Amino acid sequence: MPDFIDTHAHIYLDNFKDDIEQIIAECKAKGVNRIFMPNIDHSSSEDMLALESRFPETCFAMMGLHPCSVKPGFEKELYEVERFLAQRKFIAVGEMGIDLYWDKSYLEEQKEAFTIQVNLALKHQLPIVIHCRESFEEAITLVETLNNGSLRGVFHCFTGTREEAQRVIEQGFYLGLGGVTTFKNGGMDKVVPFLDMDYILLETDSPYLSPVPYRGKRNQPGYIPIIAERIAQLKNITIDEVAKRTTLNAEKLFGV
Image (cartoon, rainbow, N blue to C red; front, top):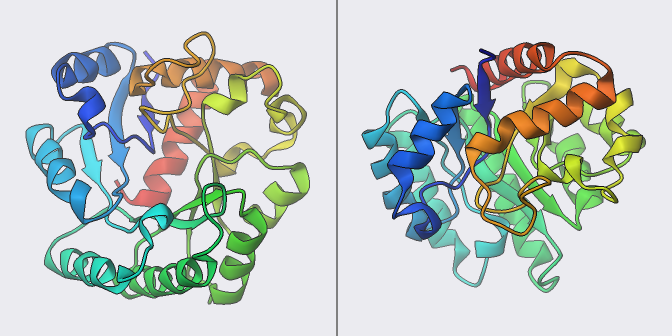
């Protein structure tokens, strides 16, 4: 059976509180043996770390501040991120980034939080996991400006163009592909065939962005093979090859 990694899933949220053991069992039955969990803010870290403790061979935590949680007083949130990073090992700094979909009024604060978290990642020699909804240009420009040659990471939920993908790869960063890859009008069928497999990661963003045929329903890491199958079709390779290459990529980036 192929060995998959879901590199981005919020399975510590209340959406999974009633059936998390079943969710984990279904993942493993489908070959999804490791799940990487991005943090949101101080309100999510405790539940995330508790889940990691319950399933230490399966669940791996990140530490960061989501851009939608960058509000007045966000500095306190970043102090918490810094404190956690100093206390123990995490696999990445994230989920961080820029989000201009819901609210554009905190762009400068989001840029400041982005820069601070990049510096934390460099200090702790960790990759960054970038959220860039409606803000690819702002995010990639920051990466291009701040990258000193040792910065590494992934653009989570990548849905951009071939040209945007190339800018990401030129920085040595990876592209996180998820449920949108399966959408009929998602546009990824025009992009994925041209992507270098050495820079692709699989992710679900559970409980959000379920792949077809589960679109609109709760997403879960067990749907990773659906995303992998679509990538295999678009790349004209086997799903086993997708699993092998993306798993190696994830292990290389996150050091797991």
